[in-house]
Structure formats: C-alpha cells, structure tokens
Image (tube, rainbow, N blue to C red; front, side):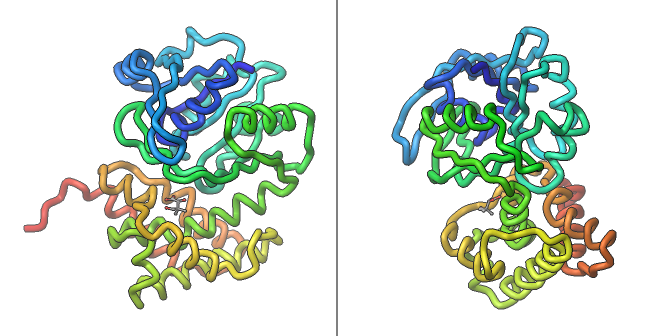
Length: 308
Ligand code: PAF
C-alpha cells in the first residue's frame, strides 16, 4: 500500500516511522526546508519503542506524488481543508482518507472535499512528543481504533487494520467511531483549554479546587449535548474518566498548552468550540465552555502584548 501522511508533527512522524516498516510511505510537509531536512536525516524515534530511525521520503510539492492508496491526515484541525485541497487530485476512486486528528468535525470537513464514502475516522491512544524536526519521543503505546461513520466495515478497512497491526501499531475496527470520537472529545473538553489557560500539567487540574470545579462543569455541559444527540460514550462516568485521565497523564503538557507555549493557534474551535456551537443549536446552555473558548482565543491574539 502506498501511504501519504500529511503533516510531519509528532503523530505524523510516529505513524510514518512504524508504517514505513512494511509499506511505502511519503510525507507531505508545507515547509520545503523541513521536508528536505527530514528526507535527508530520516525520522528519529526514542522512548518506549527504543531508539531507532526510519528512512521516509518527504516532499513539499504534491505535484511529485503519484497514485496513493491511503492518505493519513495529521495536520491541526484548522488546516484540514487547505491540506486536503492540495492533494485532492491524488485521491482516486480507490483512495481512502483517514483522520488522526483531535476534536470533532474533521470527518465532515474531509467528506465535503473527497466524499463521505472515502473517509475513515480514527482515535488513537498512541502518545508522541515532537522534540525537533523529524525527531520524536514515543511517549505512550495504546490502541488505535478506526471506523466509518456509517458503521460499515468494507474489506479496505480490514486491510488497513492488518497493515497497521503488521507495522506495530495495535489497531482494531469499531462500528461506532462517532461514540469513540465523542468519548475522546469529552476528555479534551475537560483538560485542554483549562491547562492552556492555567499553564498547568494535566495532573494539577484535579489537585486545585477551582480547576477541578471548572473541569467538572465543562464536562457536564458536553455530556448533556452528547446525551441529547444519543451518542454512546465508551465509559459510564464521564467525569470520573476525565479525572482518571488527568491522573494517568499527570505530567503531560496537553497538546493545547504546547500550542500556547509555542505561541501558536490552538484547536479550541474543534474542542470546546464544538460544544458551544452544538449547545446553541440544541438549546443547551454552555456558559463554562463559552468562557474557556473566549479566554483561549484571547490568549491566541495577545501573545505579543506585554504587561505594562
Ligand atoms: O490533547 C492532549 O494533550 C491529550 O489528548 C490528552 C488526553 C488531554 C493528554 O494530554
């Protein structure tokens, strides 16, 4: 299988490294200098899977890529449409597009560009941190779950599962990928914005009374929406689950806090922002998520303002 990975971030490099063990992998990077550097140096990995290197071709020019069987979208959610438009002509009749992104709405955005039949949703518990260009720490091993929004399991989906497993990425198929994506979303709703605003590690959120209370209220609002939409979450007690994730990932710097520390745009619109927008259309009040969204957006636009 010829696999195109868009975005050489932590997860993009991790999947490229493992998949290149058994398949032909190409990475598309928007930055030509970095593309050349990673092409020459290869992807370097350290952490729980040991220290190793993978040779992968990286290009910034989609025009040089031909006939792709599978596209893995590993860019930030706000870049999905632009990234996909670049490679639209490479998505042939039998090409599938799999999203490994955070948040809600990516499947729909990809479906609008290539057609919903070609889209595969995924949730991964693999953890990776980008140390420098093409250099990552494999921080946590966990299963990846893939599935179609309509629950169908065509033979190509099984093939992708086999290839991922053969490459060392533990993978299974779910008929309810929506439930899994919402289950992950609720964890991100409770943790990401709060850590970004307070600049705390995940574990600290449940240690302080104030953050623990805001976390609880943000999660409660999101769960109300999930219930109204009849989404089946994969855990019985959402608040207990989010608190447990805080403890299990206590020393993590959440992905949103990492963005804030690098003065980058965050995925707030696809996490707490989704809760606010869906709340509005369903008539469910989401005041806590609304405050979180507005604070993170204020941080994003005020990086260079100094306190006088
Ligand atoms: O986005 C993240 O950082 C992660 O999904 C999680 C689970 C919050 C752990 O840091």
